[in-house]
Length: 73
Image (cartoon, rainbow, N blue to C red):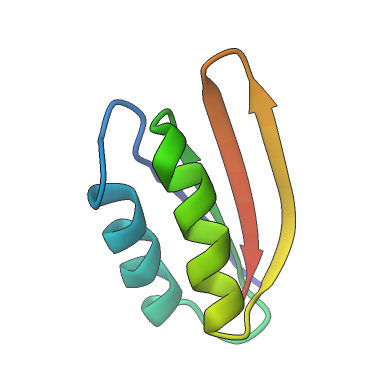
């Protein structure tokens, strides 16, 4: 199992979602993709997009203005 981390801090929509999708395409089943970001709309969009794709959200953490979303492929 691989862990892939994408840092989209400072980026606004749709960059975090696009980067997240790219990483998920490269990831093998069972891999975990972690997205770091600061854009509030992306924090809502990424989990919605993942659920639509049938992917599991492992966790969402928020600290100050930053968030981290863990997705299992």
